[in-house]
Each structure stands twice: as C-alpha cells, then as structure tokens.
Length: 203
Image 1 (cartoon, helix red, strand yellow):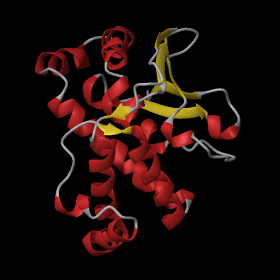
Image 2: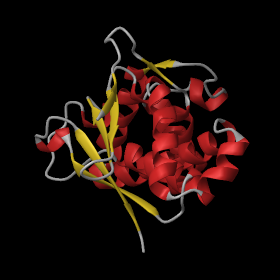
Image 3: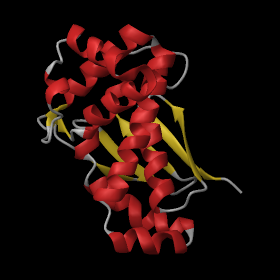
C-alpha cells in the first residue's frame, strides 16, 4: 500500500469542496432556498463570491454538519454525492493534463490506475486536508482515506462519505475508464479504522 501522510498542522483543502456543494444545493433545492440557508448559517459571503483560495478544512466539515442538520443524512448525502461529481468534472477538465486524459483511456485499466493514482496521491492534501490518502492494487484495487472529513464525529450503520466516493469515481471514470465504479466498503462512521473504497469495473 502506498500512503501519503500529512502532518496535523496541514489543515487546508481546495475551495471546490465548498463551491461545488453550493452548486449542488442550488441544483437540488433552487437558488432561493439555498440562499436562505446560507444566510441562516452565517455564510452570506458565499452569496457574493465563491472562494478562490485554499480554505481551512474545518469550513468543509462545518458545511457538512449543517447540511445534515438541515436536510437529514440521506438528503445531505445526495447533495454531497452531486458535489463530488461536480468536483471530479472540474478537476478532470482543469487540473489533469490533456495528454493524460487522451492517453489513459486507451491503456489497460490496471496500468492506467498505476499511472494515475500516484498523481492523485501527490495532490491528496488538497482534498484530504489533515487526513491520509492511500491506495493499493493487491489483493484488489482500493483507495483508503484515514480521518475522512465526512466521517468525523459521526456514527452510522452505513458508509457516509458520499462526496469522496463520488469524487473518486467521477475522476477515475473521466480520466481512466468510464466503466469504473467506486464503492465505499468500510467507513469510520461505522467503526472501521478508516474509510475504504473499492474500485471495480463493469463488464
């Protein structure tokens, strides 16, 4: 297993976690309801301008907490799932070099993952914050996120990391192969030591 460790002092993540969650909220609940909720939760600044810089990871954690308090866990997970999809699309379009996007879909999936996952790991701090991202190829293809922001302080009977699951799946489908599926198979919210995501391929 290859792991990218980050010191606890690193507590910032990229702004897409916030930007795309607000966009997903607007898709699901409309501009007016989203604006009213942002005002109620003290996020008026997001009505005026979206962040264009790294943010404290606690901002995303607080946003997730407030979403769950407002919508309940299932509906909040649907919003975060869509936010993950939007984040994946942004990253694939704007952060992945064009040659990689053109070449990897024509490479055997296993080899493409061995090329692409190290690149994701290199930039893991931009989405994991103080968490730790790792990947493995044996005995199966897996991604691991220790101390996932979505699972912090939560107890649940099912996996809760819908943002990360959708972001991982979307990015791998857009860059590597559109038959890839990612499923969270273990979650810290369920008592697991860390959150684990399996990578499979639809036949």
